[in-house]
Length: 436
Image (cartoon, rainbow, N blue to C red; front, top):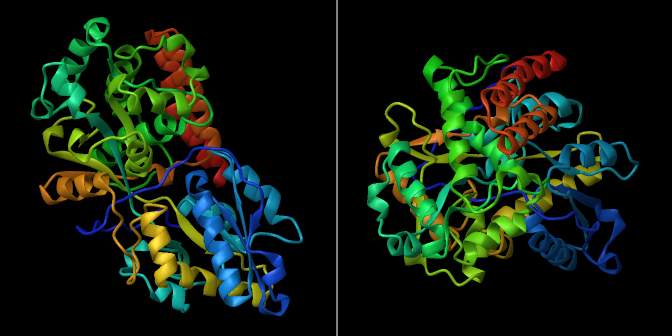
């Protein structure tokens, strides 16, 4: 199929999601309230941080309609493996996710045609519909997300700097270098640890790696490719060097640092800068951050013209219905999703518990200050960095790249960076060759 995905950035839309945590048990609505004749819904969720909210919606829907809804949430970084295991079972998921065109290529035999469904018609724009070569809608994007570098302005100002100083990589590096050099005196460092354990490495082998993919695509005027030249890998090295150098943790032990530890460094006031997305706002609220102490800056890498670069905005989350499920279960699943994204109960949970800004006619705007900052950045005229990692050929490519990045952090040299280049360029081509 054409490996491209049209995503038009609407000024009123930007938002959340993420990947962290452990898999939940398969659970949902109380089966004693369920009526088997009405079908069964089984959702394999991609988002550990939203598991509790999905479980609550499952219970509420079962209580309201008598339809049994079960939710199983895959652990961070295991979704494809979990889906492969579950889809072959007699009681397979009726709702699952793909991450874009490449995800669809792997699971196309299980993707139900959503084109004429009421659920698909609830979209504000067809730009959030994932379509195949025949133009049929086979996935629905349900959240638009934004990430960048979150800044503790209070600490930044305590260090003698202001957010207005940072306009590109050169100025970001100057500020970060100064803070790191005075970390002992200040009582905090520049960056929170770039942890490379399984529950946090996605921030770098996927989200950070999006930058050199984006820059190469942009320079060539393309939106996807089965080969990469690595034309922006020097930019990638710039920012990775900064992350691993201007932080408190010895780069040699990044692979042992968990998401909880990396997040705690920021929430406990031990670091000024923290790469993450709008989905992190709940953690910041719980930690007692005042909105006025937060700022959001782009991930600068030294690219030409980056003074006009915005935050990274897009989606990789597309809901699909299992075409091989029983027709009764297919309809029950469609009805459930429509209820989630149109009912007062569902839209309230999606916006205020999950923190998602969804592209549906009935969607509510979440009370999320990072979303406001993301919208402000878009309104200012900055050019958002599109999410091109939906074109990444496989999870194996990410794993190989992440391993090479961790090895480089442990022993930075031109030779170890060459291994990053090999994983990035050669690995991309070889993994696409497997897709065919």
